[in-house]
Picture 1 (cartoon, rainbow, N blue to C red):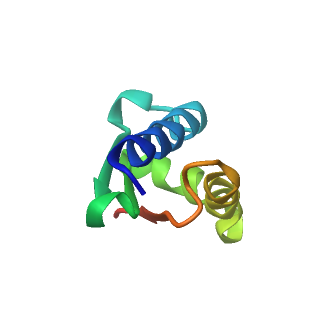
Picture 2: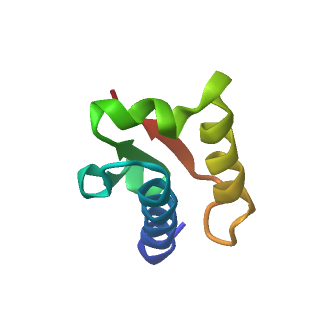
Picture 3: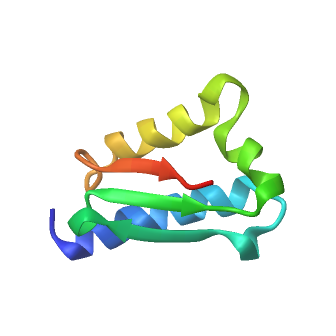
Length: 80
Protein backbone atom coordinates (compact mmCIF):
# COMPACT_ATOMS: atom_id res chain seq x y z
CA UNK A 1 0.00 0.00 0.00
CA UNK A 2 1.39 3.40 -0.93
CA UNK A 3 1.38 6.34 1.43
CA UNK A 4 -1.22 8.12 -0.71
CA UNK A 5 -3.57 5.15 -0.42
CA UNK A 6 -2.98 4.98 3.33
CA UNK A 7 -3.75 8.66 3.79
CA UNK A 8 -6.97 8.30 1.76
CA UNK A 9 -8.01 5.48 4.07
CA UNK A 10 -7.16 7.63 7.08
CA UNK A 11 -9.25 10.47 5.62
CA UNK A 12 -12.16 8.06 5.18
CA UNK A 13 -11.91 6.93 8.82
CA UNK A 14 -11.70 10.54 9.99
CA UNK A 15 -14.77 11.52 7.95
CA UNK A 16 -16.84 8.63 9.33
CA UNK A 17 -15.70 9.17 12.92
CA UNK A 18 -16.41 12.91 12.86
CA UNK A 19 -19.93 12.20 11.62
CA UNK A 20 -20.59 9.84 14.55
CA UNK A 21 -19.12 11.65 17.56
CA UNK A 22 -20.43 14.64 19.51
CA UNK A 23 -17.00 16.30 19.70
CA UNK A 24 -15.57 16.08 16.15
CA UNK A 25 -12.70 18.43 16.95
CA UNK A 26 -11.30 15.77 19.31
CA UNK A 27 -11.00 13.10 16.58
CA UNK A 28 -7.37 12.24 15.80
CA UNK A 29 -6.49 9.73 13.10
CA UNK A 30 -2.89 8.57 12.65
CA UNK A 31 -1.20 6.03 10.44
CA UNK A 32 1.14 3.43 11.90
CA UNK A 33 3.08 0.44 10.63
CA UNK A 34 3.74 1.97 7.23
CA UNK A 35 0.07 2.83 6.71
CA UNK A 36 -1.21 -0.68 7.39
CA UNK A 37 -2.73 0.36 10.72
CA UNK A 38 -5.05 3.32 11.22
CA UNK A 39 -5.30 4.52 14.83
CA UNK A 40 -8.44 6.39 15.86
CA UNK A 41 -8.56 8.52 19.01
CA UNK A 42 -11.68 10.32 20.25
CA UNK A 43 -12.79 12.18 23.32
CA UNK A 44 -13.38 9.73 26.20
CA UNK A 45 -17.15 10.32 26.08
CA UNK A 46 -17.32 9.53 22.37
CA UNK A 47 -15.39 6.27 22.47
CA UNK A 48 -18.59 4.30 23.07
CA UNK A 49 -20.23 5.92 20.06
CA UNK A 50 -17.36 4.82 17.80
CA UNK A 51 -17.34 1.29 19.19
CA UNK A 52 -21.12 0.84 19.40
CA UNK A 53 -23.09 -1.86 21.13
CA UNK A 54 -21.20 -5.13 21.00
CA UNK A 55 -18.73 -3.45 18.62
CA UNK A 56 -21.22 -3.08 15.78
CA UNK A 57 -20.19 0.45 14.74
CA UNK A 58 -16.49 -0.44 14.83
CA UNK A 59 -17.21 -3.54 12.73
CA UNK A 60 -19.15 -1.43 10.24
CA UNK A 61 -16.29 1.07 9.95
CA UNK A 62 -13.86 -1.81 9.40
CA UNK A 63 -16.17 -3.25 6.73
CA UNK A 64 -16.27 0.09 4.90
CA UNK A 65 -12.47 0.29 5.05
CA UNK A 66 -12.11 -3.25 3.72
CA UNK A 67 -14.58 -2.56 0.91
CA UNK A 68 -12.82 0.63 -0.15
CA UNK A 69 -10.38 0.46 -3.00
CA UNK A 70 -7.43 1.53 -0.86
CA UNK A 71 -8.10 -0.17 2.47
CA UNK A 72 -8.14 -3.88 1.73
CA UNK A 73 -5.27 -4.78 4.07
CA UNK A 74 -5.68 -1.98 6.60
CA UNK A 75 -6.40 -2.53 10.30
CA UNK A 76 -8.36 -0.09 12.45
CA UNK A 77 -7.40 0.34 16.09
CA UNK A 78 -9.47 2.44 18.45
CA UNK A 79 -7.10 3.92 21.02
CA UNK A 80 -8.15 4.27 24.67
